[in-house]
Image (cartoon, rainbow, N blue to C red; front, side):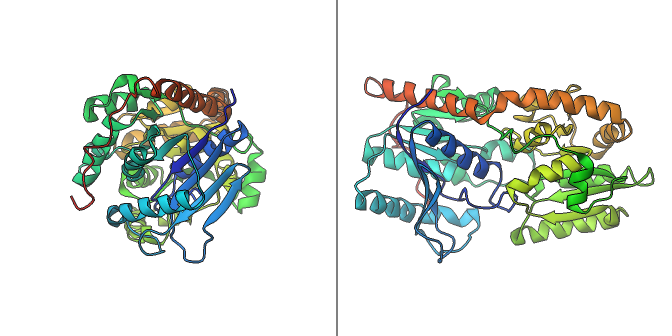
Length: 422
């Protein structure tokens, strides 16, 4: 299914060029990059607008044929905490408009990623008179409910509600996310399309474990437990460390924690102290962020990948691990319930405490035949997440929306957006 559209992707708070695993870079960065490339392969042109965080970066960077990243001046050209970004949204919008007008560009539609981008896109659609497709990736109200210490600001919740009710279409990764958008935000069910996220099955594929470990400098006889993701409390890494501590004394094991950057230092220090207090600090290694193309080595070197998050809208790490034939132990939350098949491709744990995770880890680490069987099933199951299928699903959303917009737009105009100062 090919289509020729000019699409404005809005990814205000993070660039698809950022390394996944750093504080503001994760599955969404991979999604924006891979989806834009897939759309371009099908004939469309995609401009990805993001905030400039480096004074020396060029205004535009060609990501692939038909895809470019546009760095816009909006506040200081340096990384900023997300809580400071709302005050720069209007500047971001004005910079985008200057770029568009200066090059006499016309777009067929807007596709926003994350709530900050949704705020911008809802305003731009009024100026351009084009439809807006929104994708939230995570939801603030759900995060607040998932973990008592989460404190997403009211401005985020209000913006998400306005975007959910005003966008012409919403793309979400699972039926679970669709239900949340309807129940918590008042989104219209008929405006929501469920299109699962994707994984590059040529990059993420099974390879020889000994070779992967050799290239990473890991010993072959050790049992390797892997975590990949941002280093933040919502990811539940403390639960994983507690579970690993219960394996202490039962043979060699090594816990690799991949992800994090300088801004995650305080959380990393807390986790290192936790590991030390439990007497397993010599079993835990904080690897830091890893280039996306190098991640398959870690998945293939691992005996099991653990995703102990309090909330995941999709669970890309779980899918990447399964694509490499590595079984997953994950929390029974959000999109993970649709990606991991309990007892078939891994295990879903319904409790956010160390003991049940430790039980599943002991079961898998002690049974190579079971690990291999789950890994084979996992590789087969992830075929449904090919990027070609994702691109086809999103193009279908675009086509149906553009055909319907002239008659009766599904969403309302953006009259209820809160001001950034709220």
